[in-house]
Image (cartoon, rainbow, N blue to C red; front, side):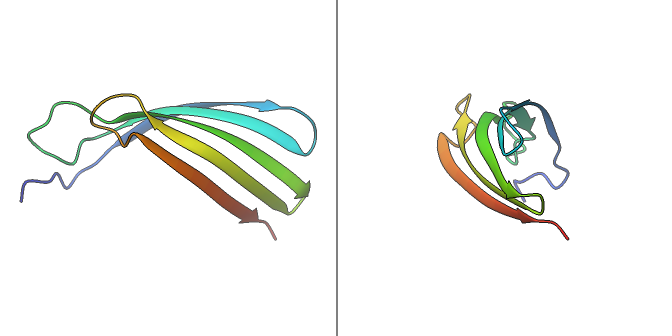
Length: 84
């Protein structure tokens, strides 16, 4: 049992509304390291674009960039939000 069971996440985000269909978002955060012997928390930055072609639909794409050795280096992200 070398992994922590209680994990925490802290982040802050900013968003810029380009127009009523397009939004740019940046989110910076840190997580508890699952390795109980490591004192370095993974730190990351996520930049994303959200396109809303309809008031009940969002399509988004982004990139996750690790800011230190404890974080994943890069990840490409995508998502769909449907509201009803």
